[in-house]
Length: 613
Image (cartoon, rainbow, N blue to C red; front, side):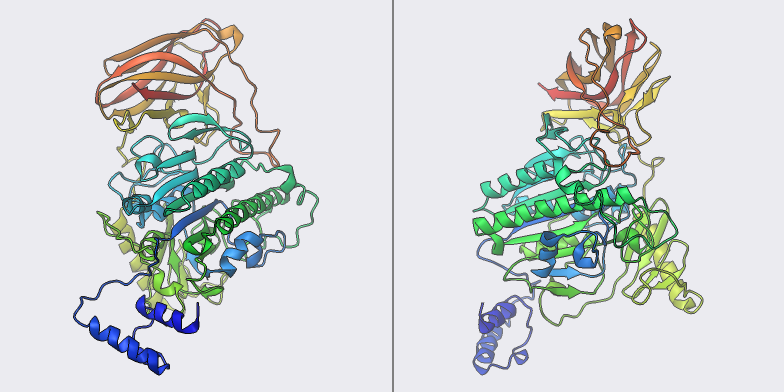
């Protein structure tokens, strides 16, 4: 684009507001005539436009720290493809997400504070955002976009919380907070259980590539919430071999102990992300749509271990800088300036309004947005930008970030511009500033009214009339008697140790519409225990069956783990048809029992699958 053409482009899009900002006399005349012809029009928000709405690819890493990139000065790894998004586009130096996964994802999708929309946990229902919220996928789909999400959803499994009910035409991946195996694991495709192909992140990317190819001539929105470097620490040999014997050049600066092999595994996983980002950008270039595609890259929280992170305090789960500062790179070649760095603070709640603005799409949300469009900052112009506050919250801990300062969870004040590591509390030097930020924090908490398990009365929906499948996993159930959960982390767990006929598993279920459902149980059962009788009940509905087919695979995952995991290992669970069940609309407790145990134990239970007939 020539200099004059670029000036016209910027003027028409509102990035140059007056002809006096231009020195070219001919252009001044043109711009003056444009101004005169538009003088009686009502001023509206001006957004950039293109002949065809730009495509969008939103890539989110899971548990990657700000410091896990070579562009941020980490010499332990190389991330040229991710770095190139920043080099070819705009990078935000002070971009903040929330301390853990599901809150950040909820904010990205809705443009609203997670704590006001029903998210308060990472499992057992607390990861869901409320049903009246509008997502960026809803907005773009209404504007004619094809939409897809491939990866870790983590904002609700059962429709209408499922991604297919949140504006995404196609979903492939898993809806829980973490997954137990990354090599050809059990996944779902639009609600149906399927088996993955190869290493999960590579597989998700391949689905993304196929989606891009299919819709290359139409506007599309591709959401790629990757699953790594979240544990379990599994990564193909090609990437692990680069690190297993490597001496780390940069290590964690604090008193907490760094686990060297965990760090190496995490960095190897980030290099795998970089490889897959390269596959995406190469495909855009090959198809000739790179210049009409917005590519965004960020992470959902701070690093999941003590490792080099630019000297910042805190990690995943913390509301300090190290727990919530994220890379945020936006590339739109030939439209956004290349290599621009923005110092203004921004947040995950800003993603929705920014994408709506960049695509000239009305937000059409029923609730007021908490975020603001970052479009004025993205373009190469002098823009007035009002100062703001960014709030980070998790587990009753809240911090507040202004452009220069952070008030931490204990109301200590830090000058982040000069003390990114939060080493010197200056609250005594600035009592008025400290008090004003404390008041802002308290006012914010009073406004958003965070939920908790005690105040969350939402049941798990079953049988939405518009969707064929509903999963009811062990994650959302409650064990009674001697039955145990395979992990203290409910996501991807299963129930075992079912020894007594008096034991049971229950779920708080809300059947959304009357219907007949085919019911499958995903189970394992030893040869000695076959012939176990099971019943499943909800209200007056009762289903009885006997499981005679044994299926007793070993636990797995350890063979691919680079570091011993905290979560449970997994098994290949098998589906058995229990029969058909008539369910009536309404809320009630669903109960799974084993009234006849012929051996020492009943089956292990992973999930129930309901298919509306």
